[in-house]
Image (cartoon, rainbow, N blue to C red):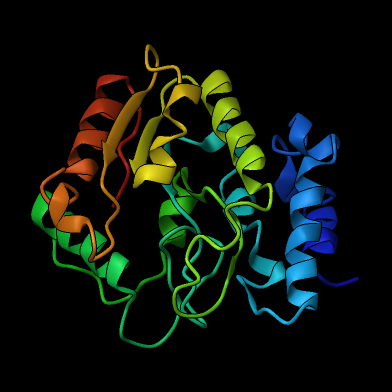
Length: 232
C-alpha cells in the first residue's frame, strides 16, 4: 500500500502510535478522510509534501506521554524538498528555509547561543517538543502555502491539541501565526502556558516574533513547574 491513507494505517498499528491511537479522531474516520483527500490531490497531479512516510513523523517521534512543549505552525514547507513532517524542521543542503533562519535568530538572541547550521529539529522532538502543523500536508510549489488547510486536518490537530491539554500536566504551547492561534480555546490555560506570537516567516517575524523570547520563557516556566528544561 502507498499514499497517505495507507501511511496513516501503518502509523496507527505501529508502536510509535501508543497514546495517540486512542484519540477518537483516529477511530471515527476523520483522520482517514483527510489522508484520503491528500491522496486524491496527489492523484490529480499535485505534488504533496511531506511524503507519506513522513506525514505523521511529529506524532511518531514525540509520544503523547512525553509532550512538554508544543510548537504549532500553519502547514509544512511548500518549497520542494523542504518538508519532513516536523513543523519548521529541515533536512537538506543550505540554504535553510527562511522561517527556520528567523527561529534560529530569535533563539540566538534569546539564549545567547550561536545559530546552528543544521536545520534538523528532531532532537527537540525527542525531548518532548511536539513539532506540529495545523495541517499535516501541503501542495508543493510557490504560493501553495495553506493549500491543504481545508482537507480536514484541522479536526485532527484540534483533537491532538485538546488531548495534550487534557492529559498532560504542564505544557508550553507556542502558537506561531494566526492559524495556530485559532487553537488557543482548546488549551486549558489554568494548567498550561501559552506563548502566542506572529509567525516566524519573513513576512511577519518583525511584527512581534523577534523579541518574543519563547525559548527562555518556556524553560523558566517548565523549571517553575518542576519540569526539566529543553536543551534548545
